[in-house]
Amino acid sequence: MSKAAISHTFKKLITPSRCRECDSYVYFHGYECAECGLGCHKKCLETLAIKCGHKRLPRKMTTFGVDLAQHLTETNTTVPHLVEKCVTEIDGRGTKIKGIYRVSGVKSRVEKLCQAFENGAHLVDLSDQHPNVIANVMKLYLRQLPEPLLTFRLYPEFIRIAKECGSGTGAEGTSRAGEELRDLVGRLPRHHLACLSVLMHHLHRVATQAQLNNMPPSNLGIVFGPHVAKDFGGLGVTQFPGRHSAPNTSH
Picture 1 (cartoon, rainbow, N blue to C red):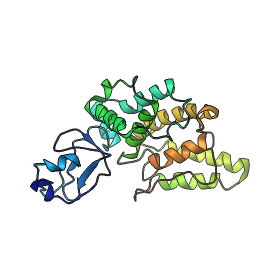
Picture 2 (cartoon, rainbow, N blue to C red):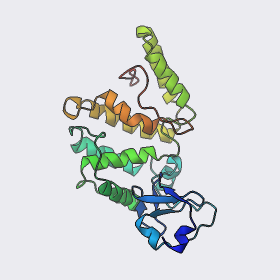
Picture 3 (cartoon, rainbow, N blue to C red):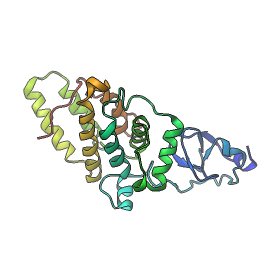
Picture 4 (tube, one colour):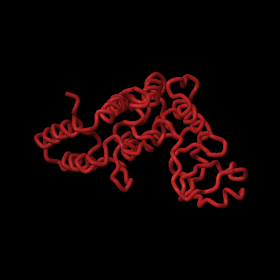
């Protein structure tokens, strides 16, 4: 490592960042200083010229790890370009692929596509990208939101309703849980609600092809639960308790 690199207290990168040495996207093979937050590729540690200032550096990301409301305000959009483009592309040619959203894409291609979205999300062309790569990028984006789509504040209520729905209380109990769920969803911030709506309608379309893709609602719930619902400690749900499907809230 360079002398400047030795001044940092590096740990494995857990949040996408821009390498302060080469200014490109870094995630899978990167390190982050525990004190100043500087992100760097492993290969760039040999030439890094920035010493640790022992205070947090400003973030350089425009999409990944950026607050949803802030990102949408800055881009003057109602749903992130990344989400819209990924959903549209997978709807078009990915819903019948076995294990879509469960099978990993090639890491180098995922990282390259993430960088493309950072450089200009509205200009990204996904037509040559494999659906598994696209799916991985969208999951990564959702996982890195500072505030998950279901929000920290409402997380306990979503879990409570899911448990009640799965407790076997009969049709009346399920109907009541459905009403509570609709009311709760309506309390989400408008940016979160708009993005969640696009995502849930898309996942419904994916689930309708479960005989081909092996991704019924239960599997999709396992995959997306940790990305959209977390508590303040960062612990995400792996599947809402007790049921393999949620009450119908589409009315």
